[in-house]
Length: 117
Image 1 (cartoon, rainbow, N blue to C red):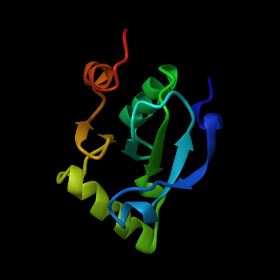
Image 2 (cartoon, one colour; image 1 turned 90 degrees about the horizontal axis):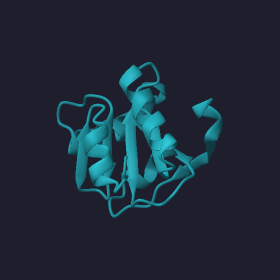
Image 3 (cartoon, one colour; image 1 turned 90 degrees about the vertical axis):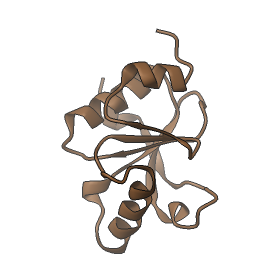
Image 4 (cartoon, helix red, strand yellow; image 1 turned 45 degrees about the horizontal axis):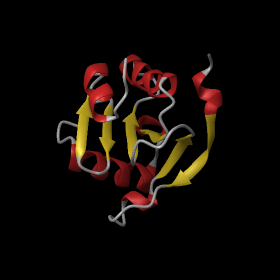
C-alpha cells in the first residue's frame, strides 16, 4: 500500500494553543480516536512504521514532516515539538494534547488509541 497517497489534504489543526494552529499538518482520514498529531521526519524509518501502524489501524491523524518545513514554519514546529518532547526525537506522537508517545511503540499506540490487536 502506498501510504503517501492516503493523504487527503493539508490542514491547520485547531488547538487551544495559537502556535499549533499555525502549523500546516497533512491530514489522513480514518476513525476518530481523538486529536492525534505526529511529528516525524520524511527520512525516518521508525516514523514511517508509526504512520503505517496508524493507517493500517484506520486511525485519523495529522502529521508534519519537520525536516521539510522551512523558515518561520520550522521555528513554530520545533517550538511546539519541544513542548511535548524536550529531546526533540522522532517520531513523536501527541494524543489529545496530553499523552505523548516517543519512538515506534506499537503496544503503547494500541493501548492509548484503544486498538485491539
